[in-house]
Image (cartoon, rainbow, N blue to C red):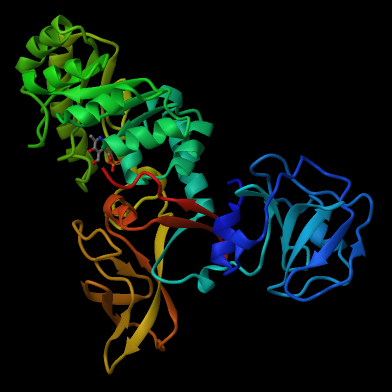
Length: 448
Ligand SMILES: Cc1ncc(COP(=O)(O)O)c(C=O)c1O
């Protein structure tokens, strides 16, 4: 997993006032840094070895032990919590935070290279969403191996984060599934709009018109005359027919799909195929039952597809990603971050998501941490507090029975039972390698 850091994110995480530091462009590996100046404590300008390089390139760079670290070259080294600006002649070219080779260089709102001991998981204000980079990397790689390229159309509703979608795209998945117009717009704005499927019905003319205006390939699900008319009137071009395959939610009866496809074509829409989500099957514990019921559901989808035509047969989720061989693409989302509900199944994905919380009260027999149901999706049940036994959650509290002694101020890790609604409660996720926060991603697709 690439370890890259956003400037404001790191600055916020370490409590620095990045806004007061003028960040300007760092041009590649700049060999002309002439001096540094103290920021909090006056410091006389120092010469930096002429071969000192600003590590990195536009936007992000790898952090690797073999790469030169400008901070190591500073003499005397910087102290903890010290911020200095780097200047080339009179121009500020970057910012260094801390010393001991742990440096941060600025480029507008991004930083090029970042290693700072000061940003650690146990320093984060809680409750804080934390993503384990090794587990995330494992999950993304496992899916890309199993379902390469267009065989997987990742569902972004599970993470609502364009930075994570970008990692999925980097592993070969360029078509995405979305649940809301906001997710569609955010993905398009992020330049990830090669092929976006809104796997949901929508009739609001304003929102449909905004979808039609996106700089992206936009396909929407339809399951009725009304949704077809709304899509056509808004100027959309492409639809899939959403088919009911066993879960009482959206989707037309399979034997009506052909008529709806004809109607859509008559309204000038291109029909790309069908979608049908076996949501009633994906979470079943017994694999044999999952296999049976997936086949039953997909037979209905294939019947519908025979009447509809088109290149797409879209369905599936994390729980059926290696079972559903009837579709042309799997709309899995949870696999990237995972949750404990899916963790109970026989899946090759690791729990990458947790919430770090602080113990705020200890009583005789129970303890309380600051991670309640306003920080957790609870529809799949209680969360897990690692090493302890959860009693229940209330708005801002998780009450648990300590299985080992805890004290006020201790940190605990909470594992959510359902990833999608959990992420939607948070505005950022902290990428952590071990205890070190190496990046902060905005959960920028929240909302509708
Ligand atoms: C339409 C649709 N497709 C696919 C999925 C798959 O998601 P997951 O990866 O969580 O199984 C969902 C989840 O709710 C969904 O609503």
